[in-house]
Image (cartoon, rainbow, N blue to C red; front, side, top):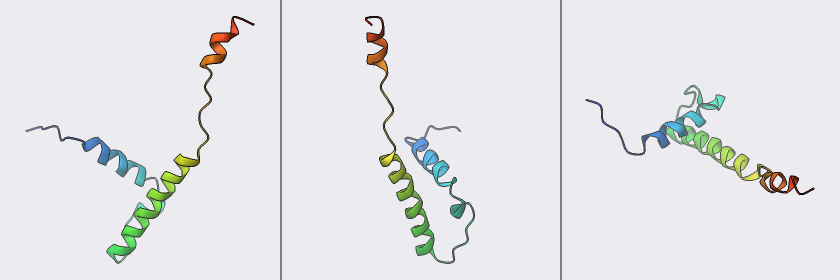
Length: 69
C-alpha cells in the first residue's frame, strides 16, 4: 500500500546533497564518530557556500525603466 510520508522529500534532498561529496560516497570510516564528523564537515561546507554566494542581480527595475530612457 502506498502512503505519502510527511516531509520525506526533505530527507531525500539532503541525502542527494551529501552524495555529491566523494568522501561520503562509500563508507571508509571504521567508527561512527568519524563518519558523523565527515557528514558534519560536508553540511558545513554546503552551508558556507550558500551563505557566501553573491546574491542574484535584480533586473526587474531595469526592465521597467528601460522604456523611459
